[in-house]
Length: 124
Length: 128
Image (tube, rainbow over all chains, first blue to last red; front, side, top):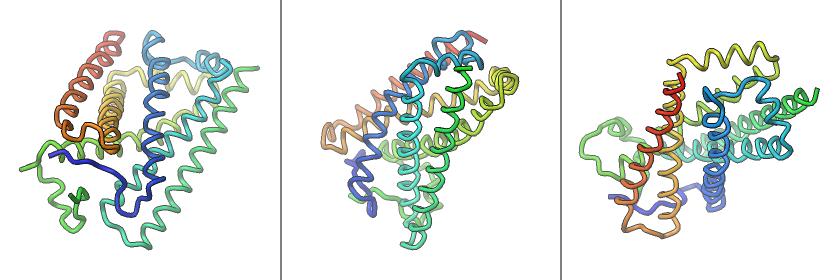
């Protein structure tokens, strides 16, 4: 039997809603990402020069950073949902929350730095 | 109805017997979610090759074109398509739409997923 789903216990509405909204944005952005990186180019992968040229299209660096934030937000709220399946104690959940936010923040900062570096390398 | 697995009965999570379609849809969502999250982190770490220059990145791309890596990549694409389409079902039913028709919706979306995975696979492997 398939049942109606919604926010889990200890997952507030806005966290759940953010996960759902981010998921829909990812479908759109991942579609562009997969088409550019796997369908347009013969062989399916961009070379170094092609990546640098791709990032010179004005809106692409902004879109990629936006994609990065959205995808980490969705996936790490999702990981939290999976951990909630294990019924963690309040203390463990607090530690998990801090760990997930920290790791996601580090990846987003690192990814943004990488986008800036690639953009600047393409301008040389 | 309570739809959260019981943590104190975790060995039963791996018991494939007597499962209904909703349970398989849930398992599929969880497995693809974990796989995609691991891939996402690895993908971003590997892309640091871009900052190391053309030799580092292009040698990685040459490795990524090996059949074994492409098979792995097909699992990621399949996971993304299944997770995305299953996620659409979860979202629309969460807002109260099509709750009574979840089973045909799930079957229909998985058929679409199968077709999309086949097309991606055909495109990628035909260029090897």
